[in-house]
Length: 513
Image 1 (cartoon, rainbow, N blue to C red):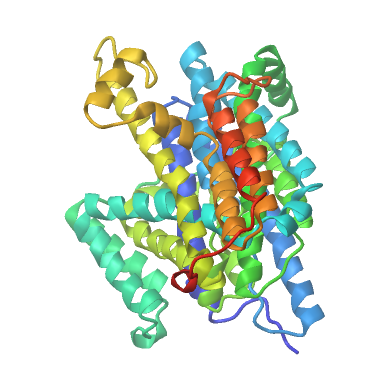
Image 2: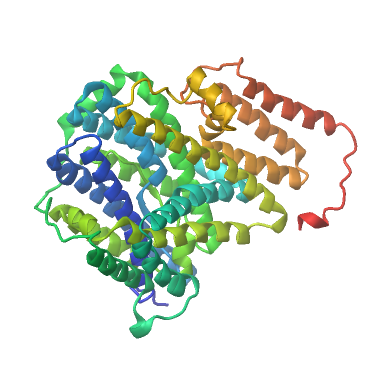
């Protein structure tokens, strides 16, 4: 049995993962330079090379895992796990860790130092999560894990990317046409050209013609990655002097190791079974090494394995991306690509990845559990709503408008209610969305299966997590038993307990199938 690292089918997978990774690196470089005023030597000389090292090391491990799996199962169709910077966690680190430090001190260097310290601490949390990851995977219904994963794919990948298409329709629809033709319709393009590559080339040509793209060598140079022990120690000192930042770090890293677990589960559904504990350790080590070498941003098994599996990619697609971005970081070529390839050209590929994840989730679960997948979407819908509300308020402040309220100010909450916008409820549902989505999906799946005791346990667990602020709150704290959401979950568990004391009879369940 031959399992070549590179195959022709890796080309489409390469461009899809390339687009996803490039989009994250462009967002990081843009926000750090233009929002947090970090100098180019930090962004292109430290952050991006550090990110490239963490990505390359993790990809190398996952390519090795794919080779081992192929030999063990004597298969030639194994797809390596995609790996890179976690998109949702990236935004949390940007605006929940780095941003507050910069806005309070006006010191971009300190903000970066705290960021890399947060990355190292976060990686350690993810490694510790490996101890319970395999157990969580065994006891959690597939609908719960894949449902919350699909919710992320829907709102933070597909929906946001689709909006970018409509911001630059000439570019976006050019790229979208090739993606729909080749990746969705599965039609072969002339000369066997990969549809992902064709989409980027065609859309970039349109962008150059209409002036929305340019050839610029700003930021190009030689950047050798080195460890930043001194800066790391400064950042750690600031973190421990301001422990309230751990209220952001710990929940988001819990999210990150659960995201890894969910994405490994989706790979198993697609036909490739990888050890979830080893994957969580790999992600944690990659994050810690990235922090040491200058990148604050946590890495994870990416969300799109089923999409790459559908493209018949093997290992070369991931290894190629790692090599390209390592070279790009060493020579500052990410800046060049950022000027050349517009976001709207990349967006249709991300739409395809997001929708593929949702489709695989529904196909891999029993039809009766589809409602459980759907209910797991809801916290993530609230999450993106709250993020956009916060963005709108920040935009008003940046415009110089005075007395802009905070999102949860009583006056603003009251005014929003009169407009039909329920800020308190949406905020509660948004906080800890990855965990609460998984809990609601699991609760519903257990109830559908008649496992009332397991559903009660999920409700009680949700109450406990709420009391500590892990879900439905913006900060960790000692148990708050005055929170009505805690008692709501306990009431739900109590009603199920009482109901289970009596003979349970089902109505016709044919409509659930």
